[in-house]
Image (cartoon, rainbow, N blue to C red; front, side, top):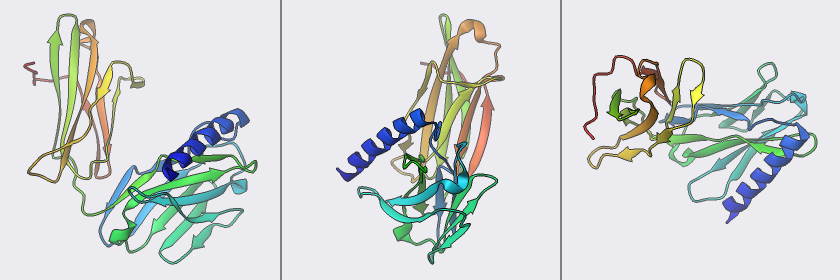
Amino acid sequence: ASWALLHLLMTNFLLFSFLDGFAQQNPVQSPISITKFQKSARMTCEIQTGENFDSIVIHWYKQKEGKAPERLLFVSGDKTTTDTGRYIVERKRVQKQCVLTIKDVIPDDAATYYCECTSVRQYMVFGSGTKLIVSRSSPPANSEILQKKHENQITYVCLIEKFYPDIIRVTWNDDEKEITDQVVKGDTWQSTKEDDYSIASWLTVPAENEDKKYYCKYEHEEKKDSLSTQGIFHMLKI
């Protein structure tokens, strides 16, 4: 219930901020996930606003699965560094970034961390979150594009296999921009005998675009790559 209420507040404040011109979009957090074991974890919150960076108060929240978010600390004014022991926050004025570092990661640190920015008019916007996983990570062991021709359409399937953790971002692009129409992204699935994950994403295009080049791009904390639809020899038999 607490998380549902916070989500509603986040949505309302974001709507008001659009009207006010404080932030045209949420703060951009990176990376999307971090997998660490007894090391430091570092995550960045980029504030995309025309407002004076020093006037923005930046809060960091920690949310464990199934629990309400807990505020860790905040920074305001022209203070560049806040150190509370294992949590260190650094403000970078030129880049308009706020960096949170968690030192000596322990199992209890496993959670999703959100940055939240409050403007001088008290409007709040939240980042999309960075998931911290206390374990060891591994990049995708295999990635490929398959295709199926059916009447006047071609379906490309981007298959990415055996990665950990299960946090991954997959997009389709042409030579100009990201494609969102006729794209279906599946959920990650886990092998019954393995600890790693796989995912597939589908792109359907008109048959006359057969010679056009499309790219399946993925971003995992261990690896980023771009696969091209040109030169595919793997055909789906469905």
